[in-house]
Image (cartoon, rainbow, N blue to C red; front, side, top):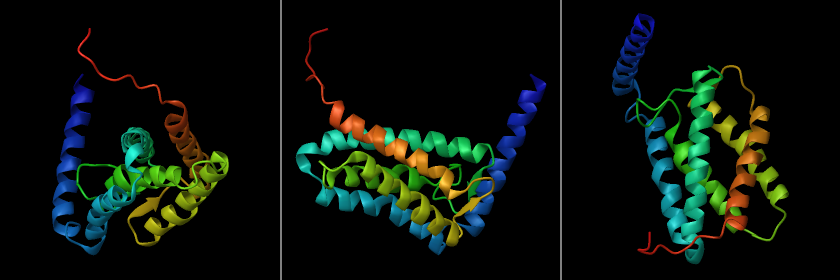
Length: 182
C-alpha cells in the first residue's frame, strides 16, 4: 500500500510540475492557439455542412470514435510510445483536439461523402491521410513526439476505427423511441 501511495504522490507532483510548465511555456503560444482552434472549428464547420437528418446517428458514431481514440492515445502515451508537448489542457495526457475533434469529425465527414462507396477503400484513404499526413504534420510542428512508434503502425488502427464507425452508422439503426413504459 505504501508503494502505491508513494507512486500516486510522485504522479501528483509531476502533474503539478507539468501544470506550472504549461502555464509558463505553453498556454497562449501559437501551438496552443492552434489546439484551441482545432478543438472548435471542425465542429462548427460540421454543424454547418452536416446532413441534418443523420446528425444524431453521426454524433453517436463520433462519440464512439472519441472514446476509442482517447483510450488508445492514453495507452500509447502511458507506455511511452509517443507524447504530446503542447496540450490544450495541462492535465490531459493526449492531444485533446485530435481525440475529441479532428479524428471524430474527419470520420463522420468521410462517412457522409459518397456513402455508397466501398468502405474499405474509404477507410484506407482515411487511415493513410491520418497516419501519413496528420501525424507527421503534428510531429513536424513540434506538438507530437514519436518515441517508440512509427506512423505506419497507426494505419491498421485507423482503418479499424473507420470500419467500426462505418459499421455503427450503417448496421446499427435499430434505435427504439423512448417511452414511459418500464
